[in-house]
Length: 275
Image 1 (spheres, rainbow, N blue to C red):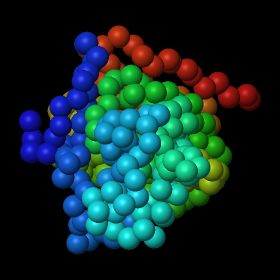
Image 2: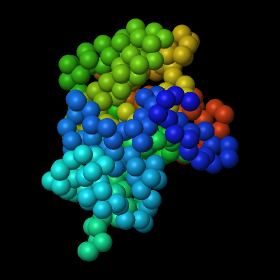
Image 3: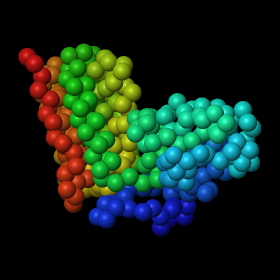
Image 4: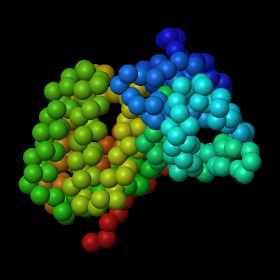
């Protein structure tokens, strides 16, 4: 176990994926010289809620205690609590204070919340739900990109696919290039609302690549490159159905590397576009 990591209870047979950064919940509250008090406290309380240090249904410690614990002013703490309230994680109760809401009320697509869940550990069921969200949106985004892209989008897609190949066995460089490719497809779709799932795509890739990444072998790397090039080529050819199919193939392949030793937990849905 890396320094700062914390054991968690896991369901029998379930594999938990934790952040490689090894953040400790008890040590995460120290103020960083590169971050303001707001972000430090937001992350500290947010991680505490996700990890169960502050249990669902329970009232958070009083403001005075939290202010002493994190070394911040009442103003900074109030802003943090309002932010957590906007994320659906806490709610204010008259004369009682803030309490932790049920998980069903949390904004699970929030970028901070996705990051905190990855840090504290997620199982394959969680990753499967991320992939289901991807397959419900990204194939359509690829189809739209085929209809709306410009020449600059095509150039960038090809260049980014080459970056994936040139990353070789460097997992971090490959992950960065892979995420950039998918975000480019979202941008080329011309639908600004789809950009909001960027954090979800990043979380899905990060979580799955901690188990297995195409950059782990030359064979897998070349296959991933060909599959992403198929997306780029379909978008360049303005073939919406081919772009959607190629994107779905990439998502299914990504899921297969995660679920190869587990029961399927992700539904497979193909996007069929009207002519």
